[in-house]
Length: 361
Image (tube, rainbow, N blue to C red; front, side):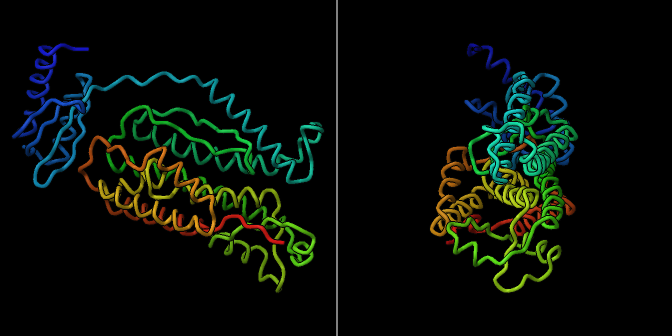
Protein backbone atom coordinates (compact mmCIF):
# COMPACT_ATOMS: atom_id res chain seq x y z
CA UNK A 1 0.00 0.00 0.00
CA UNK A 2 1.11 3.60 -0.65
CA UNK A 3 0.29 6.73 1.34
CA UNK A 4 -1.18 9.86 -0.24
CA UNK A 5 2.19 11.54 -0.78
CA UNK A 6 3.59 8.45 -2.55
CA UNK A 7 0.53 8.28 -4.81
CA UNK A 8 0.87 11.98 -5.66
CA UNK A 9 4.59 11.62 -6.48
CA UNK A 10 3.85 8.57 -8.68
CA UNK A 11 1.09 10.48 -10.48
CA UNK A 12 3.41 13.42 -11.17
CA UNK A 13 6.12 11.10 -12.49
CA UNK A 14 3.63 9.29 -14.71
CA UNK A 15 2.16 12.60 -15.91
CA UNK A 16 5.61 13.76 -16.96
CA UNK A 17 6.11 10.57 -18.98
CA UNK A 18 2.68 10.77 -20.60
CA UNK A 19 3.11 14.44 -21.54
CA UNK A 20 6.09 13.50 -23.71
CA UNK A 21 3.61 12.10 -26.24
CA UNK A 22 0.26 13.60 -25.20
CA UNK A 23 -1.27 17.04 -24.75
CA UNK A 24 -2.98 16.33 -21.43
CA UNK A 25 -6.28 18.15 -20.90
CA UNK A 26 -7.39 16.34 -17.78
CA UNK A 27 -5.91 13.89 -15.26
CA UNK A 28 -7.44 11.96 -12.38
CA UNK A 29 -6.45 9.29 -9.87
CA UNK A 30 -9.01 6.55 -9.32
CA UNK A 31 -9.38 2.93 -8.32
CA UNK A 32 -8.82 1.88 -11.94
CA UNK A 33 -5.47 3.68 -12.17
CA UNK A 34 -4.22 7.11 -13.18
CA UNK A 35 -6.29 8.40 -16.10
CA UNK A 36 -5.26 11.07 -18.60
CA UNK A 37 -7.35 12.60 -21.38
CA UNK A 38 -6.19 14.68 -24.27
CA UNK A 39 -4.76 14.50 -27.77
CA UNK A 40 -1.56 12.88 -28.99
CA UNK A 41 1.27 15.03 -30.28
CA UNK A 42 2.31 12.16 -32.58
CA UNK A 43 0.32 9.83 -34.85
CA UNK A 44 -1.68 7.51 -32.58
CA UNK A 45 0.27 4.36 -33.43
CA UNK A 46 3.64 6.02 -32.76
CA UNK A 47 2.38 7.68 -29.58
CA UNK A 48 1.08 4.39 -28.16
CA UNK A 49 4.37 2.65 -28.96
CA UNK A 50 6.27 5.44 -27.19
CA UNK A 51 3.98 5.28 -24.18
CA UNK A 52 4.39 1.53 -23.85
CA UNK A 53 8.16 1.78 -24.09
CA UNK A 54 8.53 4.66 -21.61
CA UNK A 55 6.00 3.46 -19.05
CA UNK A 56 6.97 -0.18 -19.43
CA UNK A 57 10.52 0.58 -18.29
CA UNK A 58 8.96 1.86 -15.05
CA UNK A 59 6.82 -1.22 -14.50
CA UNK A 60 3.63 0.46 -15.73
CA UNK A 61 1.05 -0.39 -18.40
CA UNK A 62 -0.90 2.15 -20.49
CA UNK A 63 -4.40 1.17 -21.66
CA UNK A 64 -5.33 3.49 -24.53
CA UNK A 65 -8.89 4.06 -25.77
CA UNK A 66 -10.63 6.69 -27.87
CA UNK A 67 -13.34 9.01 -26.56
CA UNK A 68 -14.68 11.15 -29.38
CA UNK A 69 -11.84 13.29 -30.70
CA UNK A 70 -9.74 12.65 -27.61
CA UNK A 71 -7.79 9.70 -26.27
CA UNK A 72 -7.81 8.24 -22.78
CA UNK A 73 -4.66 6.75 -21.29
CA UNK A 74 -5.24 4.68 -18.15
CA UNK A 75 -1.99 3.80 -16.41
CA UNK A 76 -1.78 0.83 -14.02
CA UNK A 77 1.01 -1.15 -12.41
CA UNK A 78 2.21 -4.13 -14.42
CA UNK A 79 1.59 -6.93 -11.91
CA UNK A 80 3.95 -9.88 -12.12
CA UNK A 81 2.11 -13.01 -13.35
CA UNK A 82 1.54 -15.71 -10.79
CA UNK A 83 3.68 -18.84 -11.30
CA UNK A 84 2.12 -21.94 -12.85
CA UNK A 85 2.65 -25.55 -11.87
CA UNK A 86 2.87 -27.74 -15.01
CA UNK A 87 2.26 -30.82 -12.87
CA UNK A 88 -1.36 -29.67 -12.57
CA UNK A 89 -1.67 -29.54 -16.37
CA UNK A 90 -0.14 -33.01 -16.69
CA UNK A 91 -2.43 -34.49 -14.02
CA UNK A 92 -5.58 -33.00 -15.56
CA UNK A 93 -4.54 -34.22 -19.00
CA UNK A 94 -3.95 -37.76 -17.66
CA UNK A 95 -7.38 -37.74 -16.00
CA UNK A 96 -8.97 -36.51 -19.23
CA UNK A 97 -7.26 -39.32 -21.16
CA UNK A 98 -8.84 -41.78 -18.70
CA UNK A 99 -12.30 -40.20 -18.77
CA UNK A 100 -12.45 -40.05 -22.58
CA UNK A 101 -11.18 -43.63 -22.84
CA UNK A 102 -14.00 -44.76 -20.52
CA UNK A 103 -16.61 -42.94 -22.63
CA UNK A 104 -15.14 -44.15 -25.91
CA UNK A 105 -15.14 -47.74 -24.72
CA UNK A 106 -18.67 -47.43 -23.29
CA UNK A 107 -19.92 -46.22 -26.67
CA UNK A 108 -18.33 -49.38 -28.13
CA UNK A 109 -20.18 -51.51 -25.58
CA UNK A 110 -17.17 -52.12 -23.29
CA UNK A 111 -16.96 -51.31 -19.58
CA UNK A 112 -13.23 -50.76 -19.11
CA UNK A 113 -13.66 -50.07 -15.41
CA UNK A 114 -14.80 -53.67 -15.02
CA UNK A 115 -12.51 -54.94 -17.79
CA UNK A 116 -9.50 -52.59 -17.95
CA UNK A 117 -7.61 -54.94 -20.26
CA UNK A 118 -10.02 -53.84 -23.03
CA UNK A 119 -9.08 -50.15 -22.79
CA UNK A 120 -8.11 -50.17 -26.49
CA UNK A 121 -11.81 -50.06 -27.37
CA UNK A 122 -11.88 -46.43 -26.25
CA UNK A 123 -8.77 -45.30 -28.12
CA UNK A 124 -10.31 -44.31 -31.50
CA UNK A 125 -12.71 -41.83 -29.88
CA UNK A 126 -10.39 -40.61 -27.11
CA UNK A 127 -7.35 -40.12 -29.35
CA UNK A 128 -9.38 -38.27 -32.01
CA UNK A 129 -11.13 -35.98 -29.55
CA UNK A 130 -7.95 -35.21 -27.60
CA UNK A 131 -6.11 -34.45 -30.86
CA UNK A 132 -8.77 -31.85 -31.69
CA UNK A 133 -8.61 -30.28 -28.22
CA UNK A 134 -4.80 -30.31 -28.09
CA UNK A 135 -4.42 -28.63 -31.48
CA UNK A 136 -7.14 -26.11 -30.57
CA UNK A 137 -5.49 -25.07 -27.30
CA UNK A 138 -1.94 -25.02 -28.66
CA UNK A 139 -3.20 -22.83 -31.50
CA UNK A 140 -4.01 -20.26 -28.82
CA UNK A 141 -0.80 -20.92 -26.90
CA UNK A 142 1.57 -20.58 -29.86
CA UNK A 143 -0.17 -17.48 -31.21
CA UNK A 144 0.02 -15.89 -27.77
CA UNK A 145 3.76 -16.61 -27.70
CA UNK A 146 4.09 -15.10 -31.20
CA UNK A 147 2.58 -11.84 -29.94
CA UNK A 148 4.66 -11.82 -26.74
CA UNK A 149 1.72 -12.66 -24.48
CA UNK A 150 2.51 -15.02 -21.61
CA UNK A 151 0.00 -17.85 -21.28
CA UNK A 152 -0.40 -21.03 -19.27
CA UNK A 153 -0.24 -24.49 -20.76
CA UNK A 154 -3.69 -25.97 -21.50
CA UNK A 155 -5.82 -27.10 -18.57
CA UNK A 156 -7.88 -30.11 -19.67
CA UNK A 157 -11.13 -30.66 -17.79
CA UNK A 158 -12.17 -34.28 -17.15
CA UNK A 159 -15.86 -34.65 -16.42
CA UNK A 160 -18.58 -37.33 -16.26
CA UNK A 161 -20.26 -36.06 -19.42
CA UNK A 162 -21.33 -37.82 -22.63
CA UNK A 163 -17.87 -37.11 -24.08
CA UNK A 164 -15.80 -37.48 -20.90
CA UNK A 165 -14.62 -33.88 -20.73
CA UNK A 166 -15.67 -30.25 -20.60
CA UNK A 167 -12.89 -29.33 -23.01
CA UNK A 168 -9.75 -27.39 -22.17
CA UNK A 169 -8.68 -23.80 -21.51
CA UNK A 170 -5.57 -21.70 -21.37
CA UNK A 171 -5.21 -18.50 -19.38
CA UNK A 172 -3.27 -15.46 -20.51
CA UNK A 173 -0.97 -14.12 -17.79
CA UNK A 174 -0.04 -10.80 -19.37
CA UNK A 175 -1.99 -8.08 -21.16
CA UNK A 176 -2.98 -8.37 -24.82
CA UNK A 177 -1.06 -5.65 -26.71
CA UNK A 178 -3.66 -4.68 -29.34
CA UNK A 179 -6.71 -5.74 -31.29
CA UNK A 180 -4.78 -7.61 -33.96
CA UNK A 181 -3.13 -9.80 -31.30
CA UNK A 182 -6.52 -10.32 -29.63
CA UNK A 183 -8.02 -11.47 -32.93
CA UNK A 184 -5.08 -13.71 -33.81
CA UNK A 185 -5.04 -15.41 -30.41
CA UNK A 186 -8.82 -15.80 -30.33
CA UNK A 187 -9.19 -17.22 -33.82
CA UNK A 188 -6.11 -19.50 -33.88
CA UNK A 189 -7.62 -22.15 -31.59
CA UNK A 190 -10.97 -22.75 -33.31
CA UNK A 191 -9.50 -22.57 -36.82
CA UNK A 192 -6.77 -25.12 -35.98
CA UNK A 193 -9.19 -27.34 -34.08
CA UNK A 194 -11.69 -27.13 -36.95
CA UNK A 195 -9.05 -28.38 -39.40
CA UNK A 196 -8.31 -31.45 -37.25
CA UNK A 197 -12.01 -32.08 -36.62
CA UNK A 198 -12.62 -31.95 -40.37
CA UNK A 199 -10.00 -34.64 -40.93
CA UNK A 200 -11.42 -36.79 -38.10
CA UNK A 201 -14.93 -36.40 -39.48
CA UNK A 202 -13.86 -37.37 -42.99
CA UNK A 203 -11.83 -40.40 -41.88
CA UNK A 204 -14.53 -41.46 -39.43
CA UNK A 205 -17.32 -41.18 -42.00
CA UNK A 206 -15.34 -43.44 -44.34
CA UNK A 207 -15.37 -46.02 -41.53
CA UNK A 208 -19.06 -45.45 -40.70
CA UNK A 209 -21.97 -47.51 -41.96
CA UNK A 210 -25.19 -46.28 -43.58
CA UNK A 211 -28.14 -48.34 -42.33
CA UNK A 212 -31.94 -48.35 -42.45
CA UNK A 213 -32.99 -46.33 -39.44
CA UNK A 214 -36.56 -47.65 -39.04
CA UNK A 215 -35.60 -50.95 -37.32
CA UNK A 216 -33.44 -49.04 -34.85
CA UNK A 217 -36.22 -46.60 -34.04
CA UNK A 218 -38.65 -49.47 -33.60
CA UNK A 219 -36.28 -51.23 -31.20
CA UNK A 220 -36.36 -48.41 -28.65
CA UNK A 221 -34.73 -45.12 -27.74
CA UNK A 222 -32.08 -43.89 -30.20
CA UNK A 223 -29.97 -40.76 -29.81
CA UNK A 224 -29.83 -38.75 -33.01
CA UNK A 225 -27.13 -36.13 -33.55
CA UNK A 226 -28.02 -32.92 -35.31
CA UNK A 227 -26.24 -32.26 -38.58
CA UNK A 228 -24.52 -28.94 -39.03
CA UNK A 229 -23.89 -27.66 -42.55
CA UNK A 230 -20.33 -29.00 -42.54
CA UNK A 231 -21.44 -32.45 -41.31
CA UNK A 232 -24.07 -32.63 -44.05
CA UNK A 233 -21.53 -31.60 -46.69
CA UNK A 234 -18.92 -34.10 -45.47
CA UNK A 235 -21.48 -36.91 -45.25
CA UNK A 236 -22.59 -36.26 -48.82
CA UNK A 237 -18.96 -36.07 -49.98
CA UNK A 238 -17.83 -39.28 -48.24
CA UNK A 239 -20.98 -41.44 -48.26
CA UNK A 240 -22.76 -40.08 -51.31
CA UNK A 241 -26.53 -39.65 -51.45
CA UNK A 242 -28.22 -41.83 -48.81
CA UNK A 243 -31.23 -43.91 -49.76
CA UNK A 244 -34.60 -42.87 -48.28
CA UNK A 245 -34.91 -44.08 -44.68
CA UNK A 246 -31.18 -44.46 -44.23
CA UNK A 247 -28.88 -42.72 -41.76
CA UNK A 248 -25.21 -43.04 -40.83
CA UNK A 249 -24.12 -44.82 -37.64
CA UNK A 250 -21.08 -42.78 -36.66
CA UNK A 251 -17.78 -44.55 -36.13
CA UNK A 252 -16.06 -43.36 -32.90
CA UNK A 253 -13.59 -41.25 -34.95
CA UNK A 254 -16.50 -39.64 -36.82
CA UNK A 255 -18.27 -39.00 -33.51
CA UNK A 256 -15.13 -37.27 -32.21
CA UNK A 257 -15.13 -35.14 -35.38
CA UNK A 258 -18.81 -34.29 -34.82
CA UNK A 259 -18.02 -33.28 -31.23
CA UNK A 260 -15.09 -31.20 -32.49
CA UNK A 261 -17.41 -29.27 -34.81
CA UNK A 262 -19.83 -28.67 -31.95
CA UNK A 263 -17.00 -27.48 -29.68
CA UNK A 264 -15.81 -25.16 -32.44
CA UNK A 265 -19.29 -23.63 -32.74
CA UNK A 266 -19.61 -23.20 -28.96
CA UNK A 267 -16.21 -21.50 -28.76
CA UNK A 268 -16.92 -19.14 -31.67
CA UNK A 269 -20.05 -17.67 -30.10
CA UNK A 270 -19.32 -13.91 -30.08
CA UNK A 271 -19.81 -13.32 -26.38
CA UNK A 272 -17.71 -12.83 -23.22
CA UNK A 273 -14.41 -14.67 -22.87
CA UNK A 274 -15.21 -17.29 -25.51
CA UNK A 275 -12.97 -17.33 -28.57
CA UNK A 276 -15.74 -15.69 -30.56
CA UNK A 277 -15.94 -13.01 -27.88
CA UNK A 278 -12.28 -12.17 -28.49
CA UNK A 279 -12.94 -11.98 -32.23
CA UNK A 280 -16.04 -9.81 -31.74
CA UNK A 281 -14.20 -7.38 -29.44
CA UNK A 282 -11.23 -7.16 -31.81
CA UNK A 283 -13.63 -6.32 -34.64
CA UNK A 284 -16.23 -4.16 -32.91
CA UNK A 285 -14.60 -2.83 -29.73
CA UNK A 286 -17.07 -1.66 -27.12
CA UNK A 287 -19.97 -2.50 -29.45
CA UNK A 288 -19.13 -6.09 -28.46
CA UNK A 289 -21.49 -5.61 -25.49
CA UNK A 290 -24.51 -5.19 -27.79
CA UNK A 291 -23.46 -8.26 -29.78
CA UNK A 292 -23.19 -10.27 -26.55
CA UNK A 293 -26.70 -9.27 -25.45
CA UNK A 294 -28.09 -10.27 -28.85
CA UNK A 295 -26.36 -13.67 -28.68
CA UNK A 296 -27.72 -14.34 -25.19
CA UNK A 297 -31.24 -13.45 -26.37
CA UNK A 298 -30.87 -15.91 -29.27
CA UNK A 299 -29.63 -18.67 -26.94
CA UNK A 300 -32.57 -18.09 -24.58
CA UNK A 301 -34.94 -18.43 -27.55
CA UNK A 302 -33.14 -21.58 -28.75
CA UNK A 303 -33.62 -23.03 -25.27
CA UNK A 304 -37.30 -23.40 -26.14
CA UNK A 305 -36.38 -26.10 -28.68
CA UNK A 306 -33.34 -27.58 -26.87
CA UNK A 307 -33.28 -26.78 -23.14
CA UNK A 308 -29.49 -27.33 -22.58
CA UNK A 309 -28.93 -23.95 -24.28
CA UNK A 310 -30.20 -22.41 -21.03
CA UNK A 311 -27.29 -24.05 -19.22
CA UNK A 312 -24.96 -22.27 -21.64
CA UNK A 313 -26.74 -18.99 -20.95
CA UNK A 314 -26.20 -19.45 -17.20
CA UNK A 315 -22.55 -20.44 -17.72
CA UNK A 316 -21.86 -17.42 -19.92
CA UNK A 317 -23.54 -15.10 -17.41
CA UNK A 318 -21.48 -16.59 -14.55
CA UNK A 319 -18.24 -16.16 -16.52
CA UNK A 320 -19.33 -12.67 -17.60
CA UNK A 321 -20.43 -11.20 -20.90
CA UNK A 322 -17.94 -8.34 -20.75
CA UNK A 323 -14.47 -8.26 -22.26
CA UNK A 324 -11.29 -6.59 -21.02
CA UNK A 325 -9.74 -4.21 -23.57
CA UNK A 326 -6.25 -4.70 -25.00
CA UNK A 327 -3.54 -2.13 -24.22
CA UNK A 328 -4.10 -0.47 -27.61
CA UNK A 329 -7.86 -0.27 -28.06
CA UNK A 330 -7.50 2.38 -30.75
CA UNK A 331 -5.65 0.95 -33.76
CA UNK A 332 -8.22 -0.76 -36.03
CA UNK A 333 -7.78 -4.12 -37.72
CA UNK A 334 -6.32 -4.19 -41.21
CA UNK A 335 -8.22 -5.68 -44.15
CA UNK A 336 -6.53 -9.06 -43.87
CA UNK A 337 -7.59 -9.50 -40.26
CA UNK A 338 -11.13 -8.33 -41.01
CA UNK A 339 -11.27 -11.10 -43.61
CA UNK A 340 -9.93 -13.50 -40.97
CA UNK A 341 -12.76 -12.49 -38.62
CA UNK A 342 -15.27 -13.07 -41.43
CA UNK A 343 -13.72 -16.51 -42.01
CA UNK A 344 -14.20 -17.29 -38.30
CA UNK A 345 -17.86 -16.28 -38.59
CA UNK A 346 -18.20 -18.57 -41.61
CA UNK A 347 -16.71 -21.49 -39.64
CA UNK A 348 -19.19 -20.79 -36.85
CA UNK A 349 -22.07 -20.88 -39.34
CA UNK A 350 -20.79 -24.15 -40.84
CA UNK A 351 -20.46 -25.85 -37.43
CA UNK A 352 -23.50 -24.56 -35.54
CA UNK A 353 -26.53 -26.81 -35.05
CA UNK A 354 -29.65 -25.60 -33.20
CA UNK A 355 -30.52 -29.04 -31.73
CA UNK A 356 -27.28 -31.00 -31.23
CA UNK A 357 -28.90 -34.12 -29.74
CA UNK A 358 -32.44 -35.46 -29.89
CA UNK A 359 -34.06 -38.76 -29.02
CA UNK A 360 -35.95 -40.91 -31.51
CA UNK A 361 -38.14 -43.92 -30.73
